Length: 442
Image 1 (cartoon, rainbow, N blue to C red):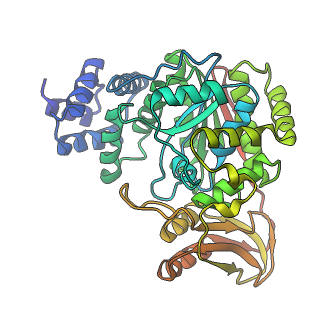
Image 2 (tube, helix red, strand yellow):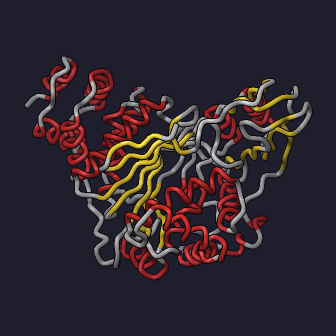
Image 3 (tube, rainbow, N blue to C red):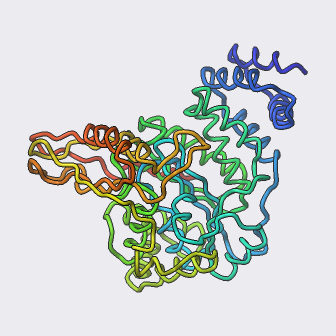
């Protein structure tokens, strides 16, 4: 079999067979297909797409490129959660201990941030001493004892995806639905959970900026999960403005702690309750969504979820003193305010521009090798629909480098659109996707 023939086949819009795709992944993962040829294939897939069978074959081949995690020694149903990314998406930090406190085991492998989107592992590493690289045995031991552990992916988990993602990032093929689905689902399925809740974000801060594309992506991911015999639910959420108020690693940890103290931003709290309620239902701790929501609200009020987060921090070597004293988290040297240049209502906050502003400050990575500053970031003071007066605070900027501040401030200010009329906001939860079908709320 010649790989050039497969490139031509896909370029012409023909279907790749299971054997074609197995050959492609095995040969590329083994270093036998050069990057320039795989780049051509990725571009062919980007323009010609793949049907569900091809996506399923690609997902399976990528799973088989590495090790499949065995979580069977952990009692009960293990439920994972994945977000397709966004700005201020602090959900996992609060959600995982909430769900664990309710009795569902959460054995989670997370990633680092790239570009305008943040990464859970970077955020956790802003906690002094917190270890995100653990052996599989240690990881499982913590989940058994504490009920929750969050670590970075091991190098032998879907290695083909690591190679392919790096190539997609430099060839303009990141936002291809077949490639997104196979990348996400191969990692989730190889990570060993029994059930999965997906948060599919859409809007200016998401990879899928258009709602119809997010719905399509979510439907395919749920279908793939069901074909692999996993219980799975997709939630399409609004990322047209940043989630919560904080954007930046240590700032987001602080905000997650506020949620676990039964405070914090309403939109972040609500998303945690929605996703968590579905996780409890899939974990068979509750029978209905509403029962799960009620249970999680009680857990937040009681402080049990906050204690669970503390247990996880201690188990993974971190300084749990940050819970009572957030000043122990990395703090930027300087803070400045961004003021409104006119009065009115906040019509729009462009999430991508806010995320890029935080990245310019050093909170994110422009390239995978970029070093990040865990202390810097942005704290919004207004959200879409809020009234604002001229010279009133729009946001706080936490920074260490005055040169980086100039461009970041300019971009951040441009992300806010202020108008005369109060806008009609889209709901936070736009749709759910399950084996029963799609339910829309917009």
